[in-house]
Length: 309
Ligand SMILES: Cc1cc2nc3c(=O)[nH]c(=O)nc-3n(C[C@H](O)[C@H](O)[C@H](O)COP(=O)(O)O)c2cc1C
Image 1: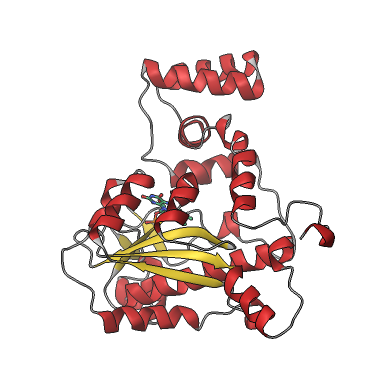
Image 2: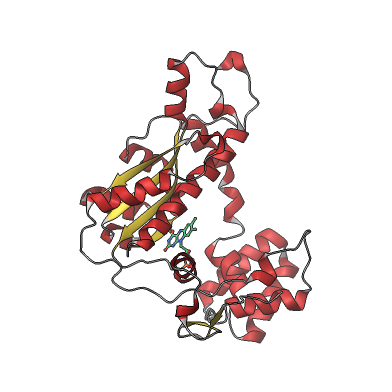
């Protein structure tokens, strides 16, 4: 199997091996291949009719049982955008003309069930939570693609979880409505170059899972992150050592630091798992998140007891 049969990335532009972008078989494929996250937006407003068009496109997405267990909050007000930027700790969010907060919404389904005299335990069920999560993300991605198709740019913001309670309060989310992801939308001021991705050879398996050998795996990741070589500084080294120590012990921490010093930089795997998504802190957040989820009326991780409901 050939990796990335159409695209090569030469550091400057995406080219089609067969000689240019025009060889994309159709506009949808071109759009998907050239999609990028956009984080700087023009001041230009997005007309409501255009916004409705792309939102409606998302509502045509597949949905388990066609239940559509989600709601989307459209945010245009300057003050709310500024608050969300602060809560999600990313200043550019306030400059996007439109923010869409995608939420799992069991509240509407429960109201419907109550009105129609139907039994309801969806907020106690992992299965319901799982498919709702799938549904809301599929809808968000349809909207993201629809937005690209009309010349808009977008970027997802995942850090809503960090400010879950504050966001629920700000957007007046009722119980059983759970924020999943934020999408910033607007006309791009600048469009970054497409990011290098792992290709078919790494991600797609034929008929059964195939384990790649170490050298092949390393080669693919090195190619993907060839431009990321995080500089060594004392502060970073201290954090890396602390995280390694906590998670995998002293001997591992020494090996890690030794490798960093030998190479002269912090490699992308070390950057992602020791500095960006700190391996020691990530699991520590679990209890907090489950607590927040329970406060929002989701109890799928608890033993279900009808008499307590
Ligand atoms: C679930 C999710 C959460 C993300 N959260 C953030 C975020 O909080 N801030 C940000 O700048 N980008 C965020 N991104 C965008 C990624 O950083 C981006 O997709 C990645 O760097 C690859 O770049 P590309 O989208 O241009 O291919 C998120 C993307 C996804 C899918």
